[in-house]
Length: 121
Image 1: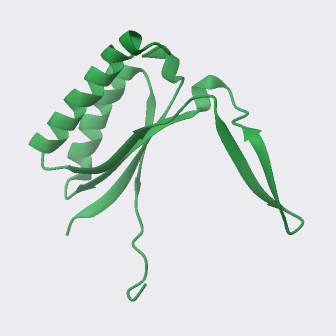
Image 2: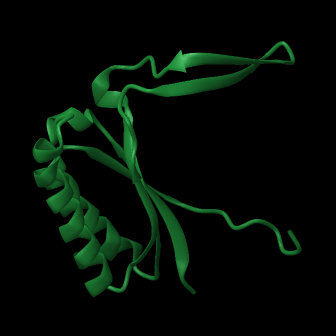
């Protein structure tokens, strides 16, 4: 049975690309190679996104009220820089490919199994 995973990429995204389009090409080339390697290995990428490293909103519930603040308030090396949603039967093989990806980007990755909603929802 194929299982879906979220691959979260943490790090300072400016390490592998800058804010100008030409500076971003090397980082994107690493991710393009990852995509090809996933396809060759039978891992199906359903979604992916690069996340802006300094623009976000933090939403919390405090004393029953919703609070929204600007964020993130973390060191650049701790910031969620992007993600992939990947279906695979071989999470160990996927982990090896993710290792190659972060070798090229300098990020840290976390692979988490996605939980399907209950039947009928």
